[in-house]
Length: 102
Image (cartoon, rainbow, N blue to C red):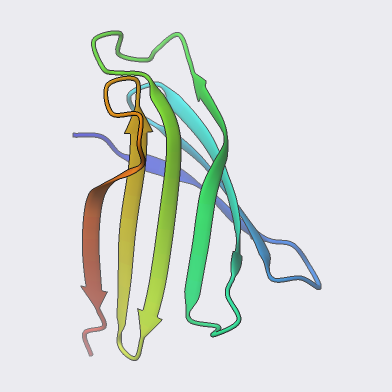
């Protein structure tokens, strides 16, 4: 299991978004994309992936990522895709749906 932490930046005056993440298994990723015209979808694709010296050597090399966030009323869905040295095509890796609780 791994954790990610980072920063989400909105480029002022645009719908462009940058997400910078570091995780506890030695990977640093930068993903860029935009808030789509429907104002309910954020689509991000990796632009830089760096494996630090702390990366776990037995894991396949991460080559590409994509995150899609979808807002729908009181819920937020995240779909995460990844490609690795063992799975070269972007493949759905994780799907999570968060629901607002009052």
